[in-house]
Amino acid sequence: MKNLTGQFLISAEKLSQCPEYVLPEFPLLGRSNVGKSSFINALANNKKLAKTSNTPGKTRLINFFNFSDKFTIADLPGYGYAKISKETQNRWQKNLEEYLLNRKQICTLVQLIDSRHDVQKNDIQMREWVNAHNIPIITIATKIDYVPKSKVLNVVSNIKKQFGGIVLPFSAVDNRYNEEIFNTLFEIMNK
Image (cartoon, rainbow, N blue to C red; front, side, top):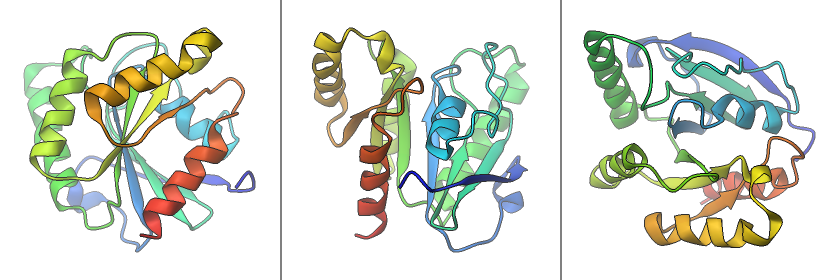
C-alpha cells in the first residue's frame, strides 16, 4: 500500500459543487486541529499535499484527494473552535449535512480523535448525529506518538468503549500504522 499516491482534486463549498466520479469516498470528520491534513499527507507520503496549519478553522471547504484512483478522501472543515461568524457556521453546518446525507460516493466516515485528550463533547455530539443517521463510521486516534507507548492500547480501548466499532491508532511522525489503516479502508470498500 505504500505506493499509493495522493493528488488534490478540487475544493467544494456544497454538494452541488462536489466532483462526479465513482470512486469510494472517505470523508474526514474531526475537531479543528485534530490532524486531518497530517493524516492525508502521511497516507499520501507527501508532506505538502494537504495544507497544515496551527490555526484552528483554516479548512473552510470540502477538499477532495484522489488516492491512485482507488478511493478519495474528503477533508471537511473541522468542528469546534473556529473564529467565524454564527451565520458562516450555520451555512457550513447546512452544507456539510447536505453533503453527508446525500453524497452517494460516501463509503464510510472517518472520525479523527486527538489521542492526547479525553474524547471531547463535540466529538460525542458528532458521533451521536452520525449514529442517528445510520452512517457507517470508523475512528482514528491521531497524535498517538505523543502518548507513551505503554498507554497506546489503553487510549485506543477507551475510545472504543465510548464509540464502539473500529478504532485505529495513527501517527503522522513515523507512519507505522498506515498499513493497517489502508487495509481497513480496502476491507470496507470490498464489502
